[in-house]
Length: 76
Image (cartoon, rainbow, N blue to C red):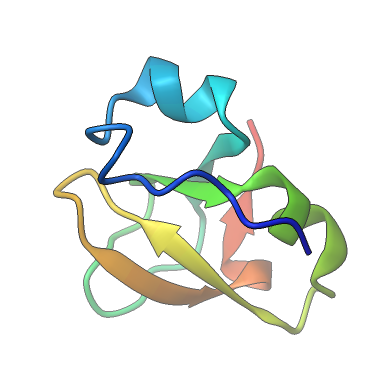
């Protein structure tokens, strides 16, 4: 997989993140740290390559990194 731009370098700016390989997805099944309906960022490459039963590294609105099962996420 390609290495995405570091979100810290992008200052967690949603516009910059979207321009640098991240997509915004919605949590449809909550896990510890996020609730249903929350928006998180994942790398588009990772989201496309990981199977539905895989785990994704996500960036939350409060700039924390959290691991969420892909099946718990949906693209709007």
